[in-house]
Amino acid sequence: MHRSPWWFHQFETLVNHFIELVVPFFLFLGRRMCIVHGLLQILFQVLLIISGNLSFLNWLTIVPSIACFDDSSLGFLFSSRRGGVKERVAEMQLKEAAGEQLPLGCYVRKVVNISFGLLIAYLSIPVVLNLLNSRQVMNTSFNPLRIVNTYGAFGSITKERTEVVLQGTSSLDPNDPAAVWEEYDFKCKPGDLKRRPCFITPYHYRLDWLMWFAAFQTYEQNEWIIHLAGKLLAQEEETLSLMATNPFAGRAPPRWIRGEHFKYKFSQPGGKHASEGRWWIRKRIGPYFPPVNLQGLKKFYEDRNWPYPVRD
Image 1: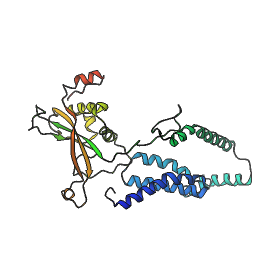
Image 2: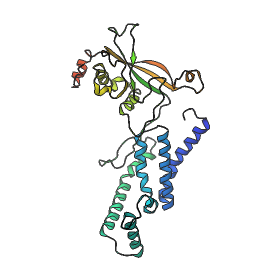
Image 3: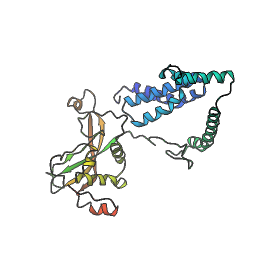
Image 4: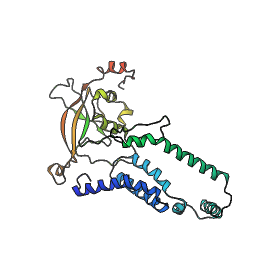
């Protein structure tokens, strides 16, 4: 999809704006338009899932869309046997239409629904004012209950993809030009240039996700990545289970680990790199963090009260 023609990307953008800005108002246009809203929202999220985009976030977005379908539209999911859910719902609807007295629970539910709706409307006032503000704030809650907020997966989107690649070496001197550095591959994030991008759904690869965000900042702002390096230096099994490959499997652990910063982009279909089986093209930006060894990290761990990793 990334290499689709420009007109297709413009069409994608138009559809995205239509689904997110126009379709939600279908909820107020009666039963049929409410069902149309649910169908469009679910279809949109399924398309995002197929594109391998945001993993579990798409599934979470589908859940509230199910509320757009009433009993009649979902009736085919239930058995038509006598005394079943379908028959009981039909009886309740007939009683309501005939003006008969409904169970007390139905009225309690209506009162709760109306009260909850009024509460949401009241709490949403500062959220709406924030959206209309030229200095709007992202990912913020406006009340202690945290019921309404301006949550978003991203505050902004970058145009380039940078990645941190972890490399280890068995060399005694990490500054030796002859030192051989071997790369650790993660389960899904870009690394090996010849590995096809993986399909992420519904499982969320949290470590890969954190590595992506770490590439936006420095290692000083993401100290956990040095913690990870220490775990890899000790070859802890629990940590290695989060990785796709361990270049030192069956061998002594690495003496040093470093982080390298690269800019990644997709190879051009039909181009030189693609003909060599490369999905990615990368360019080195520079070091992300300098070579570290287990002994040198001891004080770093102690200062933060982290358990010091021990090699088996």
